[in-house]
Image (cartoon, rainbow, N blue to C red):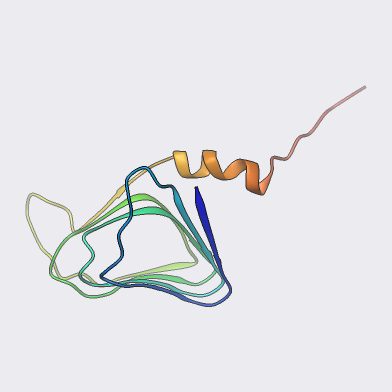
Length: 110
């Protein structure tokens, strides 16, 4: 697992690539911006700001999860058979992140 802690905004360019065996986590204080030419992107994206997808003519598949204050989805792709945005829930990102963020334990005793 690779965890990126970004104190500012994060721009993911069209040249972004990852192997399927990598677990990528991006945690930012500001906006996350995905280039308009990206069609598939894996990872866990967490931001206190806006998760922004720039304009593009192709659909986008996010294989992971997005946690953001707000979304700005600007793709212009339209189809009667395929969605413009597809988020494929991947709990492996949160499960592998647990040792790094800890786990709250409560023990009740009488």
